[in-house]
Length: 176
Image 1: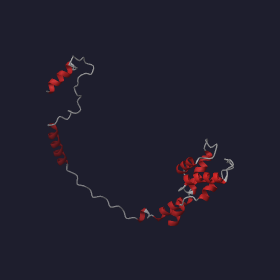
Image 2: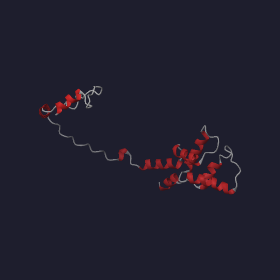
Image 3: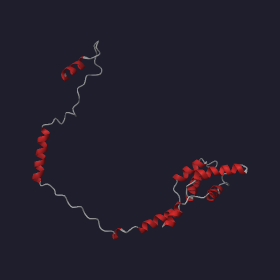
Image 4: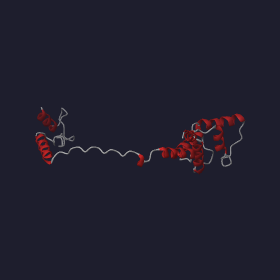
């Protein structure tokens, strides 16, 4: 399995990137460049696609060809984005996944899970006693205190020269 894992995760080499992109030159013709310009052009693609598998690069390039915006060769960043988001046909990754699945123990070979011990349930009399105790404790509390609408002065009330309305003054007097 380590060999399958390595094959599945091996990044594309510069030659593989050049081969994948170069195969599309018939579809996206390139202008004449001197050797220095070509070296810089390829270096941008190598830098952008570094770390991706050849399968991912090929899937990204195929997605660009199918794209309606594909009038010219894909920019390195766009090609990387497509390579990372488009599903690819990485046969080695699929083989690695299948080998991992095959090496797992089958459910019938595993030990059966032990059931949890059942907790003791209270008797009906105990439940009635707990409920009666709860009712006694809750009878002392005002359970609707937080639910009731708070009495507040109207924001549209007329205010006097102090800036306080008669409603607000009455509310302050009740809480004082």
